[in-house]
Length: 522
Image 1 (cartoon, rainbow, N blue to C red):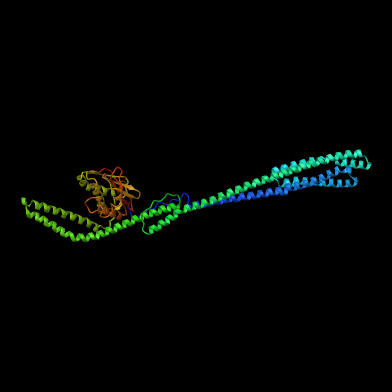
Image 2: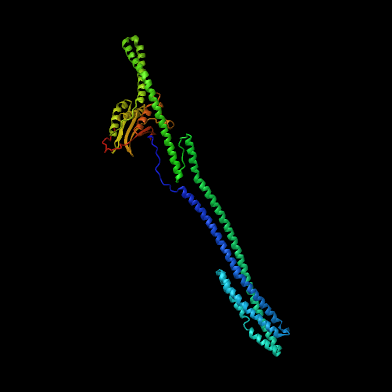
């Protein structure tokens, strides 16, 4: 890895938390507004029903009651005229009652056509017209009473009892017919009032039920909004707790639930940052370890290198002194074994010394495919002696890169040697050079047994090795070299078996190269 913190590019969330919370509270306000609006409508309807009843029906019923009382009194007075001793006094009362009746009829008509129609709905207005028509019909039932009263009192003056009886019977029929019609009209109004009151009570019950239902729904919406808002803010609490854990040293990246809001993006970016910091810290520890190893190696190598050289020289002198006698064969074998071990110790001390002497890279912009081709050609004889085959494939239009050729040679030779040792029975090593984004990728793929996942993350640690021999510094040095170039080194399983190492180097900052001519299997 190259040590740089890689954060996913900012993508505007499809739905922000603020938008969701605002939408939730808008729904709550909408539900409350519907409930409040329904309550206002219900109150207005109740007020209209009250006005229709108190300012429409009740005045009509009151006027009709007065009219019926006047008509009943008049009918009773007519029935009592045969026994009346002072008909002229009765005449004045009758004239007074008929005048009152006319006034009550007009008042009742006004109450029907103005009061009831003015405050009622369409059905009530139609009822008012029907009642006014029936009132007019009842009025017409006694239209000829004026002339009948004149004839009656004329007969009283003439003491014509036969005519008196006839006119009294005729007037009685008219007045009782009017009384009957007024009664029917009053009963119809009472029924209408009863029906209207029943309808008003039913509407009130429905309105109260609907209002209770809306209130319950509003409460449910409020509870849902509270739960929804709480659920939206729970990830923020998790991010806060996660930040506390990271502050205490927990740098293990945790899985993040996918989300399309800014809190989800924050959690994902935070975990990416934690992973990048953990990798950077791991690389820092590795670099510090390599630096410590370098200092130690320089000291140890200085102390043992000269004695080893002297031991090797003395072993060679002893072999020459012993000559070729048969009795010295066993001694020669022992001396040869000692010589091999001395050589092996010298190789190990030299490898440690390379760690101590590893300088900062001297960067030069050059043709990276040509350099890789030369290194592969140099390593091919050794690889082929081990029964392996190596190929090189270079893409066209590979840009130039800035690198230290000596250190890149050492890094690539380490990877080729590692690939060869992963295939003790022979196999194919594939080397590739490709342009990837703003860099160049150099791949080394083998077809060996692969590296188990549980130890793949440790292959770049100093002194870690899956082989029975070696110092375990080869891959650690390789990664140190690549990262010193500002690049990264990765190890991944290869499709079909084996391991794939990838060196990624940034392109040269000042220029890019034209199309490269190297494209072949070398």
